[in-house]
Image (cartoon, rainbow, N blue to C red; front, side, top):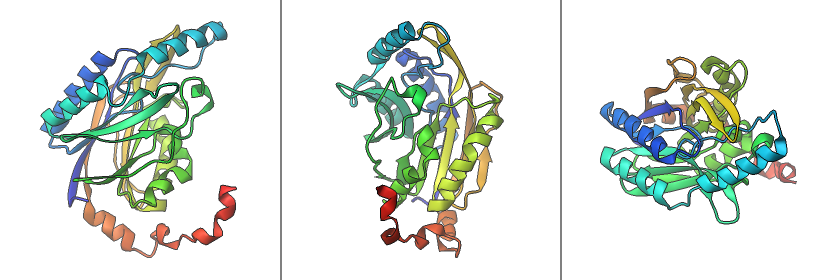
Length: 292
């Protein structure tokens, strides 16, 4: 990991099915992040293609058929036009970008987050654990990889994955240093603080359990698709390897905002040198029953 990595967690109001304009928004925020000397900018879950709202109150069968068809039409191949444009944005801004899209994997769809840099596509991660409301739209992905970048070793857990301890542990086993946690969640009350109260305990636990930096940001604004609306509050925070929040959201509810902070290698090394560093106490030979 670099001695200092300057990161931006950016909550934006992407619209479902409006991939071109969503990428315009991402490009604008990347320019701002680059102007602030950021090395890495994280965007929320499904920020490229948009989130499909999934709480219908009317004719469920009609909604599901329309929403599934719309999701299939907006899904993008990887590599494909959306990722190619994202690569161009990263190269122009000389920055690393992590953003999400509905991925067309042929006969299935996936909720996928990609990391691109000036050199092109660096990695992709498919959401592993799919909550019930989202199950009609995409399948769960495989175990995640960690990618080596000039900034450090990076991995991704998407939204619901953060609530499952094994998700981040799979990354830690590959010596991850920075974990990105993109969300699209609207727990009550639908405020940035309410979301942080819901997501924060899990992300802080994942970071202290594994001795890693965690960067989290949440989808923001109201989305409408197939006759259904859903509102997201935004929010963001950065957690250090001791599980302490080192930076938090300063924007209003349902508004776009960019959180900036610096990750310091010295903090990572110090945390992993302390008696309380939990990862060193693992006893894998005892855990066989957990996988049965």
